[in-house]
Length: 210
Image (cartoon, rainbow, N blue to C red; front, side, top):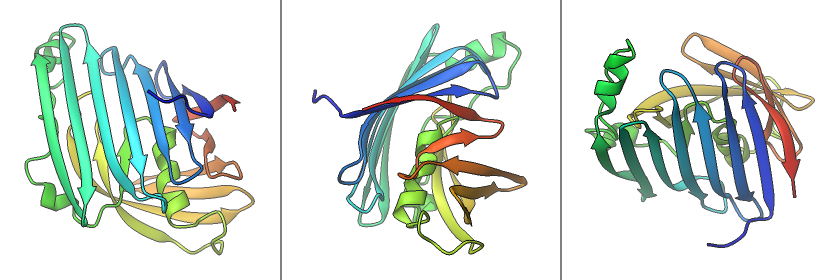
């Protein structure tokens, strides 16, 4: 496994949790990350993310694990179409139900064609994945006030269910990009490489090493 030249660490604001990512952003993005959170139940998610040189997602491998269960997801994009494979051991639904929560959807998606036209993945609770459309669309240099509507493959945690979601990114100038999805919106603060340093209500960037 190759060493990677950069690292980022975020602390969650919505629930107790963290995200630590090792990455190489010199020719697109290659990243290996670990996310931990306690809501709706304690879990650890580990992922490997790959993009092409233009920052369109090429593949995502994720495992999510908690007491008594583990799920895996592999997503690969080729010729505009997603191939999705999954695995499961144990019983996540039983753990959720015992904790007083609703059962989860199955990992993956029954119809990958619903994701056609989605060139970005969005992993629940991960500020890193917001950087994908920011870099792919060149929003660091885009005209302020112009909205960019995209379709993404949204990976829910801890279930690893994949759903299509519409999102809007609007540069505001001075390192601020407004993110909107359904009835939610937030002004994301980004650095000069497009990585999130402050995501109100979700996470804040604690440190970087490179």
